[in-house]
Length: 313
Image (tube, rainbow, N blue to C red; front, side, top):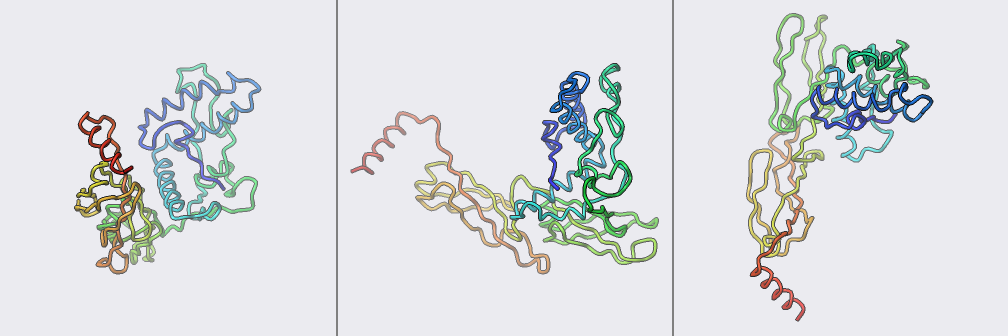
C-alpha cells in the first residue's frame, strides 16, 4: 500500500488552517466536478482524490491521526526504510470512515450532488479505507485479503516533539475517572512504548506508543542529530568561529581555514540521550553551507583578483 499525501493533493501546506483547506477544496471541486467535465475520466479521478483528501483534512480527529502517521512514515523513510517495508498494520482501523460533504453547503446551492460515500465523489482508496475505516463496514482493504485490525484497547498513541524526546515529557490522561500523569523518558523515539501499570478498567496495563514529530532544525538518526550551519565564504577560507544551535542551547564551533562546502563536522555529545542511559548522548553532525556574497565592493573585487593572480603564479 502506498502513502497518500493529502496536503499535496489539495495544494496546501501542512500548517494550513481549516479555512485554507476548505478554500483549496472549493476551487478544485469547481474545476473537476463531474457535472462540469462530463465523460472526462481524468477529472473524475482527480475529483475523487481531492474529495478523499478533504474528508481527512477537514476532520480534526482524522487530520491529527493522519499527521501522526505522516510523521512516523517520514521518520521511517529518513532512516533508510525501503518501499513496502513500513508497518502499516499498527495504523489500520475498523472505524466508520468519511463524513458526507455536500457541495450545496460549500457553494451555496446548485453545484451538484453530495460528495461522499454515496455521491459522485465516492470510491475511496485502499489507503483511506485501511487507515480511517472501510465504508462498507467489512473491515478489510478492498481488493485484498489483508484484514484490518484495531490498535489494542490498552494501547494509545502519543505525539511528542523532538525537544520533548530530548528532555523528557509528561502527559495527563483520564482513566477510570482518575487523572494519571505519565512520564515519557528522555531519549524516546518513534515506536517507544511506555507502560502504565493497572490503568485500564479491568486493572490491566496500558501502553503509550510514542510518535516523535519531525523537527525543522534537525534530522535524527538513532542518537545522532544532523543539521546545517551557514558560514560566509571568508570564514570558510580564512577560518573563524560560528554559533551552532544544539538541543541544549547554542555553542561555538571553530571553522578551520580552507573548510569546504558541504564538509561535515562532529560536535561530540550534543545529540540525543540514550533511552536506557540518559547520561550518554549521541553526537551532532553539522554540514557547512557556504554563503557566497552577491555584491562585492570595488576593494573586495580588487583583493580577490590579486588573490586569484597569486594562486595562478
